[in-house]
Image (tube, rainbow, N blue to C red; front, side, top):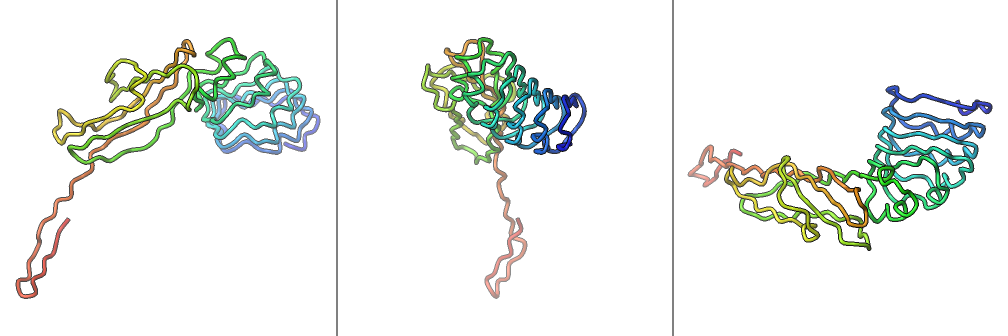
Length: 245
């Protein structure tokens, strides 16, 4: 398709396309509309798409795209709609795109934090175009009984007002929102009633971002299995033991 030099529009949204974005589409300099939203496309956005200097509408939202927004997008001269929301993008949003004052530019439901959204807030009046954002799942943690685990997640070292943190375990809120809850200590007991096992969700808000938030399931705690060792046999002559685990 990269050889279709006179192609004006390619609309392939709301299908079930998977795989990655073809870099050769960036060769179609005449292209004004490229809609691939609402598919199952994964991987990075090819920097070659920055060659589409005549593009007016580029919608890649509602896929599984990862990585950064290419800085080559700064070459867009006629862009009016750029849809990138509901993917897995992260890193800084190129200031050059925000300076273009694009009519419809959406990046909500990705992996951006408050620090990375700071410039977006000054350029986009409607916060729903850039937030809410997801928090990445960090890890499954195995803990031993009668220990304390500290869970923490930051907002990207945002330099404005302190962010407010509120944790939830298995759908139940653990406390009210507070700036001091960026680290939460979980006491793990071997008893079922006080078990720390479960899925931990975090909601981060900030007074500087009215209505916006970062949220997601970020930790799963599981008690480490205890190893039961049984002596299967004993050789008294050679003083040897065979352990069964």
